[in-house]
Amino acid sequence: MFDRTRRVSLFFVLSSMLAVAGTAIAQPTASTDRIESFIATATPQNPRQSEGDITVLPDGTLLAAWSDFYEKANDHAPARISAARSTDGGRTWGKRYTLQENAGNVNVMSVSFVRSSSGDLLFFYLVKNSTTDLKVNLRRSQDNAQTWDAPVVITPESGYHVMNNARVIQLKSGRLLAPISTATQVGTKNDGFRTVVCRSDDDGRTWQRGTTYLTAPKRGAMEPGLIELNDGRVLQIIRTQTGLIWHSYSRDQGNTWTEAAPWNIEAPESPSTLVRNPANGDWLLIWNPHVVWATPEKTVLGANHGGLRTPLSAMISRDEGKTWGTPKLLESDAKSTYAYTSVTFHQDRALITYYHLPVGSTQISQKFQSVPIKWFRD
Image (tube, rainbow, N blue to C red):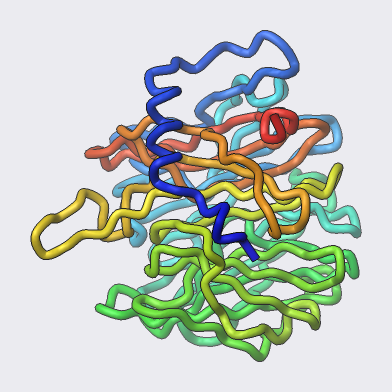
């Protein structure tokens, strides 16, 4: 559990922002530099480019896919899954193309890629039909994204089932885990989200739902993420409206879970991403550390999420979350917000995608960073 003495303070975040504010994006000049680019820039015709993931193909090509909203930018506007490729490490991206047509009454969105231990490439996404009907689907490619098998529905049960982008993990045993937040209907005063984890022991061909549902106050337990510990336990982190990330543990590979509780890492109502670097075992947490509460006397911009989703911070743990290094800023401009992060490790870099939304705008772009692993440790 996160040591209370090492809690990320608002003072540190503001100090860090002041230290780097106004710094322009540098052009990469060496293999140790960060690379930044936009995979898809929002336009009036395509106002939201969000919730993406990246996989690396055998020849080193980066394949990025994301939610491409083509009329409006709200969650219930029409969207398809678009994709683009980069052959220069993410410095530039080729022409976008449609990876998954809109097969829902509303949209399809939220991409997760998994390179299965079988060698197949698994592509997860959501099919949205209404505020009471959202399902998680999976398609499989055995030829590195040239063709895809027919969809498999992971959540056939009735209800609204959310799975964030870049959330499915494969355990050392080979079991696939898909973390879901589920509600009967969204858009109510209290949606009552609960988390549950679906599992597959046959490489994603069939799925079973876990027996534990986790709850949290206010709007509920939302947008979970998973990471496997060295001792075989699985940690679940949860978005909440409490000003803290919540967490839970499973000792049976994702079927049952301990009662959810605060993790003592501050965060607004925004999804956090926790991943393990397979090369050195480090845990990498990427999240928004700002928490600002509105009061009856003062309304704070963005306080409906407990604060604006800015800055975008990262920190590493070398002891599976017992202690954490100093947070570093991936994005510091307080005039923009950032969320729905994906991380793919490749060679000595972390390939990161996230949405970029200027404050006051409704146009969301899909941004990319390639960050040397050394940068997080320095």
